[in-house]
Length: 415
Ligand code: SF4
Image (cartoon, rainbow, N blue to C red):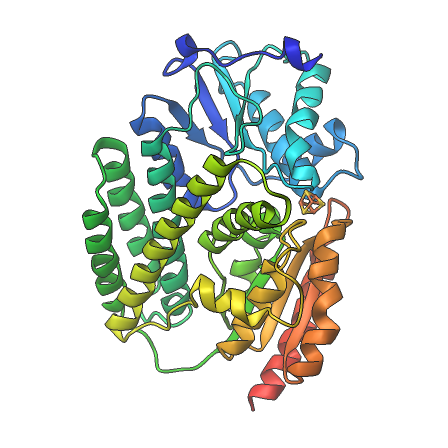
């Protein structure tokens, strides 16, 4: 099927077709779906986690393809074959990063997989901010962009502070209850109300206060940071539920949020303009967007600091400075300079134990991930970093054994 012939998501399809969204971060993506629904779409988040997804991926994409693509495409096809959806009234949404990496082309792999299964009539919507593919029935409007930013910041806040209560809660399940409560409340608001920034700032305090009320033990667990390629870093499907595994092994997990990745991508657009020139309007929009996101992130960090109960994350500005002398900020393939920057951010916050989650065969992230370990360890000898590869053939036991080894060193160092 040529690009010209691709199935389009038309204006008439809006509100009538169910748009399936693959899951990467359960809290954040629930909010994102609700933002779309507030604008008249009918979006649904796929929350499936079973092994058939990998099998479906293996059947439909080459096994040399990036593992995230294999899982996302596998999850879509598994859903389409589940019998739960009217195949004449369903569409799929996938991001196109527009960077130099293969993530820009997952969409073509997905269309090929649909074609192989006689499903090429199903429209695929590209989510991108760089003017790549478009569909007459979907437009990335200002309310959607703003809603997405608020969704990501809410998701980051909840993820960050819940990691500081979950391993210590005295009443089992209390943190989970608070997550559910706030996911429900904020989802309703994002779906039914016009969200103003004043409200968002007010919610920062309310969320922090609510999580502060969770009674926790005084015990100090070993802190373990998670960094890596964006999908396997965050997605429980991609990393075999790494966060849960670490908590069960007695660790406190520290995961830098998604907003830094968005800022990193915006920063890359601005750097491209400095290096190569380009569209002045696009550059101005990127500058404005970055300024707004930085402001929102700083306000969230201030709210955490003000509470005095939780350790805040670092600002984007601080992370960007930490990486100086390690890798240039022009390095923007895969997670680029952000990956070593997040390792340094964790070490700077005294989180010495770090799991770097990488899809097997992901060249850019092996260079900016594993490839940076030696340099980082030279300047931070007490850091304890392990790289774990994720791919369809890797066994969970092997991955967990590597992490257990790292944890054993971590626990020895703590005593
Ligand atoms: S960063 Fe790695 S996993 Fe992601 S598209 Fe590039 S090669 Fe694939």
